[in-house]
Length: 125
Image (tube, rainbow, N blue to C red):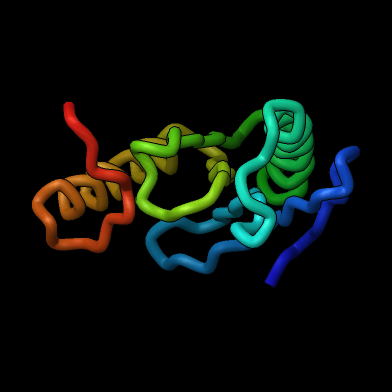
């Protein structure tokens, strides 16, 4: 369920969704819905600006520091889920950032060993 939806200047929408994960608290995803296809270069730029603004506002609201967040983007060939999206994680301190990277390391190792679903395209390397 979207926390917010933004209508882009093109008329397309993007959605900010709160992801409920025990291992990663205060986790949001800004996504361009799959039904709309892939965003244009201009739509991506507009969504990244919106994502930064929302990350700062959410971070200030949740941690008291507008700069205590991380934004992660994976290109098409490196992401697990189909569709354009960025991850916004509110941190608060260096320990939470270290924890985030530890969780991501474990997730990516499981995918690399084929123990976790991975929709990334298979191409020549």
